[in-house]
Length: 342
Image (cartoon, rainbow, N blue to C red; front, side, top):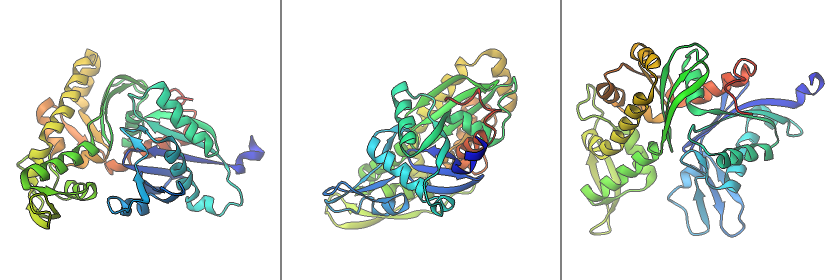
C-alpha cells in the first residue's frame, strides 16, 4: 500500500440531519447545513450548504430546497450523494489536487438504523470515490469525542441530541450495552416553536425563523439563573395577512418545548431501566454526558438531572463532539477496529 498512500486521503464525516461536518488532517474543514437547492427544470443542484440554507423558505417555483437526510438517515439518495460529493470537493486541501484521490472514510450513523439505511449511506460514500468505508454509531463517536475511554469495563451513559434523532446509549468495553433512538430532536423542537407561534400569537413563521428563536431564547425550564433577553419575531399575521412583529420570552419557548423534552426524558429513563445493575452503579458515579446541538438548549442539563437524580455534564463544543470522535476513530483505526462496522 505504501506507494499508493499519497493517492489516498482520510476523511471523517458526521452526516447529520441538520449539519454535515467533515474532518481532514485532524481539522474540521467543512461545517455546513445539510441542505441542497435544486433547479426543478434542469434537475441540477445549484447550491449546497450555507448558500442553500440562505435560500430556504425564500425560493420561487423553479428552485426547491431539499434536506436530503431525515431523522438521521438518507431520505433522498440522489441529493445526498451530490451533497456529499460537493462538500468533499470543497475541502481546501483536495481542491489543489489534479485528480480526486481515493478516500478512506469513517461515517457516523444513528444507533437505531436498519440494514437498508446503512447500505444507503455506504453506497453514497462509495460513489464519491470512497475506497474503504467504515461506519460508526453516533453515541459511540460522541463518547470518543467527549474523551471517555470506551474500552474500559466501566459504564458510561451518552445522550446525543442531534437534528433528527436523540441517541441514548450505555457504553462499556467498546460496545453499546443498551440503547434507544428516538425521533425527537432539534427539528421537532423547531416545529414545536412554529406551532406555538401559530396557536398563541396567530403568527406564521418559517423554519429558519423558528430555528433562530430556538437558539436565541430556547430553554427547557421556566426558571433560569441567567435568562436571555426577549426576542422580537417577525412573520405573517394569520388573521389579517399582514406582516407583524411580536416579542417572545424564553418562558414561552420552555412551555412550547415541554412535551417534546418530556419524551426525551422518558427515553432516558427507559434506557436507565434496561441497564444491567453493575453498569447502573457506574453511571451513578460518572453521571450522564450530553452531546449534540440539542444539548445546548438552556437548562436542559438541569432538567434531565432533576428527573434522573444524576449529575449531567455537557460536552465541550457539543456540536462537534460526534465528528471529533469520528476523527479519532479514523486516526486510530486499529485501536477502534471492534467499534467500527466495515
